[in-house]
Length: 114
Image (cartoon, rainbow, N blue to C red):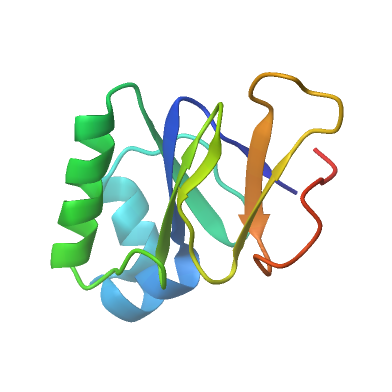
């Protein structure tokens, strides 16, 4: 399953939350309102880039590192902050937007089932 990138979307690996956040992913999900999720990722969408980057700073202060635990995607241009283990892809035939992300290798094909 993939998560649709809406506006600016911060993606957090649940495995990183189990390691770094007191109470793990369940506590983090209660403490921070999120949008979409799948079995391995939580997604947080922001309208303003300043808010998205500020949230990345909050996550970094908790020990969650961009590129290792967290990614940032833009709905129209794709990954802004790639992360090992999070793959971004654009829907085939989509001329504007259509970006999705899922847990997986960044080297995987750049299209995916939605």
